[in-house]
Length: 359
Image 1 (cartoon, rainbow, N blue to C red):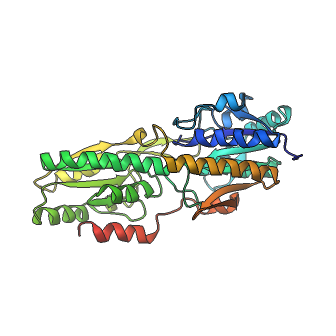
Image 2: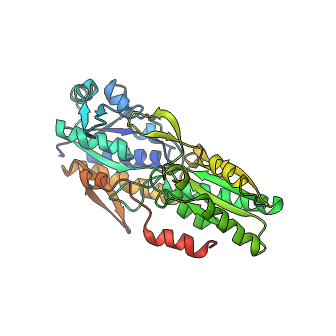
């Protein structure tokens, strides 16, 4: 019999298609192992407020293809960050989490989320919490794994959007700027732009300038191309702004992240000043990238990671994350995975985007 008898599951941060597939896999793998499963509602908030629900086969029936998360999510953070030192200090919420886990006899926690959610799991390990992380974020910027749950589905949405926008851009002779998610890494922008045939791709990994973009658009005009598609990540960094992203002033979340957004409209306004004979228009995909059902790849990935997380807990391997490498799934120390955040887009992809795009 495993030393673990009851597992708690939670989903934190931004939602991604495929989370429900992971929850389903956890429950279906835990049952034959003789494990009970409970879900904490709304991420770490559920653990803080003792808000949980039993999870059995009936609760996860029919959720494989459904987007979002049946458990809900939040950006609740039981720690406070010292802005001077960057160190995290426990708040009273940590004691409440420990009390909840003890009273509810939850032996292990499977945390599904990005670097913030997994960072909390890692810090709680120093308080004796036995946690296993499952990477999910459409940004795909978690270290220790090739892909995170949700990225492939978001990529499909961006690619389809670009396919649709190409016809309008061509018909109206416009520059269509498509703003996609990607705070610190441009996985969605770069791979989505490549798959969707974007002419200019702007990612956080490489600061850009308006004259560079103008030159690329002029090159297409000189070649007889009377339209262009630009894909820009929300965290792209204009040189004109000191290589800083466009952010909403004084707005941060519970983990201290500035609320980004608006780089597409900023770029459109700057391009209008250049006098190019192409009218810029902006499409912000925003939450459309997170919504809807998961692709087959994400459903399979989530299923494999969910099963592996249960098996890791049964084997007593904690403070770890299940990662996907090549075609294999295996454990990665949470400390190592978090140290690799944000995971940048590899140089070869950035060079590929330049080599097949306009010059």
